[in-house]
Amino acid sequence: MVAVDLNGKALASQIRSEIAADVTAFSASTGVVPTLAAVLVGDDPGSQVYVRNKQRACQEAGISSILHRLPAETSEAELLNLIARLNADTQVHGILVQTPLPAHVDSARVLDAVAPLKDVDAFHPENVGLLVQGRPRFLPCTPHGIQQMLHRHGIAVSGRHVVVVGRSDIVGKPMANLFMQRTSPLGPEAANATVTVCHSRTVGLPEITRQADILVAAIGVPRFVSAAMVQPGATVIDVGISRTADGLVGDVDYAAVKQVAAHITPVPGGVGPMTVAMLLGNTLQAARIQCPAAA
Ligand code: NDP
Image (cartoon, rainbow, N blue to C red; front, side, top):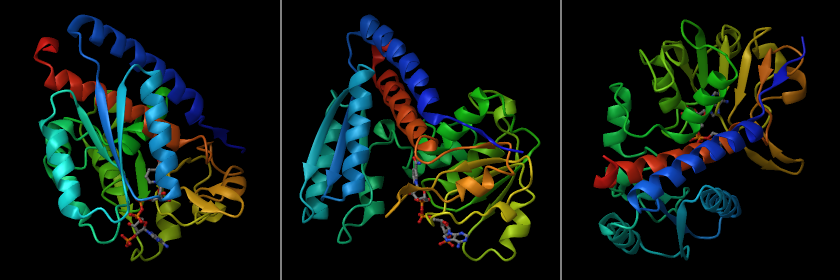
């Protein structure tokens, strides 16, 4: 079997067009332009690329984006001050703090300072709690992008065994949470999975990943998932992005796993573009929540 590529680039482009149409309708009826404030601290090259991509995507969708670029030596107090100002600014609907933040800054304290109604990354404990309870306000961008990708390719999740490798607050945990819910904004078929979460202390990882109907790798170790770790006919979602001498590389040994899986996401061009598209959707959602005329 040779796996079919799940093309995130093309799908994200289609979803971005749909969001652009929704933004046009929203702005026409309310007079409000959804606005995202992005905060970028320091000069991490990866972060700069991500923020640039997000800003470009906003622009194409009719969403206004304002970049606050701060030097690496910015203090935590200065950062908290900026976030307080953005929280209070009624022209700003969504706030994105690009991570990683410099080591001298307490990232959790900074991310917790973002007003929950403007938390378009869905990182705030209030939004995480709502998600866990099955009544999400914002869906976390990368996991929701994966859920959309499966749904729009007609790959049902309900009743299937999903194995998530990685338990970060950004990908692994919210991914498991989305899939284990009774339903989703895409309907019950996109949820109701039996979910196993693995991490660096998991014993017998290959035996577990081989049981997956849908395997999500969010590890950050280039080409970690080998063909021997994959059940023939499985769907393999590669979240990883590592910058190597060979360019951007995922967590999955793409060439080898493509020979056994039924579906696979490439890197680049798989999950990454979907993440950006979901951020746009959340920014529109934030504007709707905050704009009384839209109610
Ligand atoms: P983290 O470093 O926060 O988490 C990595 C997880 O992988 C941890 O839970 C860790 O386990 C686990 N892990 C590490 N090594 C192993 C191993 N040998 N066996 C099993 N589990 C292991 O990373 P993120 O979740 O933030 O990101 C993961 C990858 O996804 C990165 O490459 C990142 O760049 C990429 N990414 C891509 C996005 C996209 O849009 N495509 C968005 C966000 C991230 P433990 O908890 O025990 O340490």
